Image (cartoon, rainbow, N blue to C red; front, side):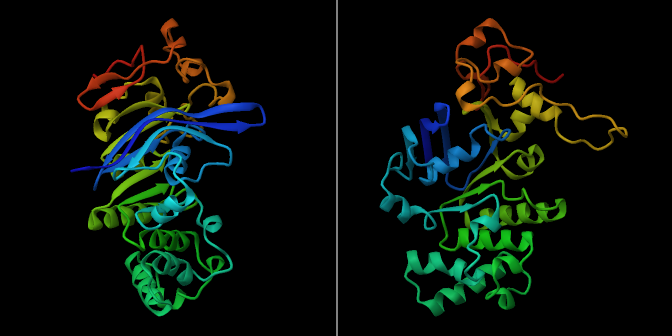
Length: 323
């Protein structure tokens, strides 16, 4: 497989009320055609910021350095015209909350048809016909009757299916799904994730999935990157990362996940402390102040240490392996 996306030493600095702050601090990422990759971590760790940098949708005044190469084209600091040509055409994105991402003043059919008219030059009638086929493809119930419905007339799961249809309209090479099941109940979550998996496998597109849910990652993506403080704490094949749990942060996320069989009133395990504000990140390992395995060496940024083939962790004092 050939490399579709290659991100090297990506850094993003934002202007905040408390001064400049580094939101991303040297992200390296590679994604082949047809491959699935997950970004996981708590809110504020840099997952969505990575996707926004890739899409050219960072907050105004953000400073970007490093390289974002998509199919050989450099996107870091690319102009708006170049990004508009890619968004919706070769890179599709499913946003976290469809009720805010969809336009309440336009029908869902018109919104699915818009990229078809803009990028492919289809007529209004042709785009409407294709939009119906897309809505049927994502299994929207009674798609023909709902073509002229407005977003507020649909359920959360139905709106998410509309978002997926719009993201897939032009047959993109890369699909970015940013917490695509956050506002949905558990049964609908599984349906949506299964649908995304089916569509990705069917079309051969690459998938970048952003989530805080370890279970979602375990059954959806081939590789995973655990992010914390704007850096990659651990990365590798999903099964290998979840079996080894080399970085203390990865181990903490795993322990804190909800589990069946807990006794009534028994509290869930938690990671001590909370994610620091961007301007308060430690100079060294960003997880240092919350880590029970921190040592003096952690005052400097840790390099990526090999755990196993294709599996790395940035930690001077890794967790012992299972067994």
